[in-house]
Each structure stands twice: as C-alpha cells, then as structure tokens.
Amino acid sequence: MGASKSRPNLLILAGTTEAAALARAVSAAGIAGTVSFAGRVERLPAQPLPQRVGGFGGVEGLEAYLREHRITHVVDATHPFAVQMSAHALAACTRLGLPLAALTRPPWQEVPGDHWIHVPDMAGAVAALDRPATRVMLAVGRMHLADFLPHPQHFYLLRLVEPAKAPLPFPQHHVVIDRGPFSVEADRRLLQEHAIALVVSKNSGGTGAYAKIVAARTLGLPVIMIDRAPRLDRLELESVAAVLEWLAHADTDLGV
Image (tube, rainbow, N blue to C red; front, top):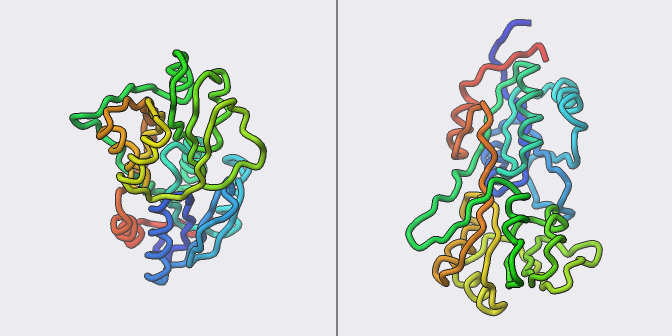
C-alpha cells in the first residue's frame, strides 16, 4: 500500500518526565497512543494513555508489536542512556518505514566553577574510582550499582527511586529513597550531611536531576561525568510542542 495520511496511532517509549508531559499533551490533543515502560520501576506514574510494561523481545519483537497494533508513529522518549532500546526502535522503524522521532534532553554543559572528569561510559566511571578511599555520591541508577563492586573501599551515597529488593553489597553505604525533581539546596545539604567528596553522574540532561550538579559546583566537588554515546541517525526534537508539530506533518504508511 502506498503512503497516505491518517490519524496517528502513537507509541511513546517512555521513562522520563518528558515522556509523561508528552503523554498528557497527546491525550489532550485527542491523539490515540500507548505509553510503553521498560518495567524497571514497580510504581509507575499515572498516565492518561493506555500503558504497556516490559520489553519487546529485541528488534523483531518490537517490529511485530508495531505491526500488530498498527502503530503509525513512534516517539523515543526514553532516558538518554537507554541506548539499546533507542537502537532497537531505530532499526524497527527503519525496517517498517515508520516515522520515528526522539524527544531528547540536551546534555548538560560544563560551566565556570564545574570540575568535571569526563569518562566515555560506565566502565570508564568504574576505572576512575580506582583511587584511595573517599566518600562518593553514586548517581548512576540501580541497574549499574553492581558495576562498582570492584571498589569497595569507598563510602557510597545512593539515591534510589525504590528500595532495593536485596541487600546492597557495598560494605559502606547509605541509601536515600526519593524521586525527583530535586532542589539545589536539598542536594547541597545531602552532600554536606554525608561529607561527600566526589559525585559520579550520567550526563542525563534535563532539570530534574541537575540539582546535584549545581550543588557539587557550589561546594567545589569534582564530578565524574559519564558522557553520552554518539547520537543515532534519527530526528531529534527537544520539546513536546515540536513533537506535536511533527505528528501533524509526518507521513504514515498504512501498509504496516
């Protein structure tokens, strides 16, 4: 079947505050869509659109889902470090000829007063902690905590969205259960209360988690900054309004 215009049936690959904002805007605009979560967090935020939870089973599984549910557009609003899911979305949409856009957060930029130690990936961050014992705020997400087990000499301050299901194996650590956005003043107090000397962070971008970076700057603390992977060859948009504008004009192939 040739390409023709149709009312969108959108799949939002979610997991960020931007994805939640997009879901609200899409619902308010009367656009059909589904919000997909990876399922790494048990308490998911309420959404005005239908939800699905869990992986797709690789590129082939995602492609089958897109066909079965007659998805016309895909918006990748996953976390900037969800590299595998983003690559799968690009591959599946390319195979099917489906319009794909990414709702991305611009990365944080180093400003005067920052002391960033750039590393290319998680392995680089682990290697950077091969140093004498210190007190570290480890802000890398629950899925990557085990990567840092080779360096048990440090005290680790861990901020998690949900409690860990099993005891954490770090000999010295403190867990804070909280969900952003966070304030600079609260994060500065947190760093001071635990005498943190070093912060490890992904360059996630956005405003929700930036407070710790500003707090580290005000306290003169170094930050091991995990840089993002190279950008994929896809359309990247930086606002909900831009995604809605794209949806209004992107062609869709009804042959899926």
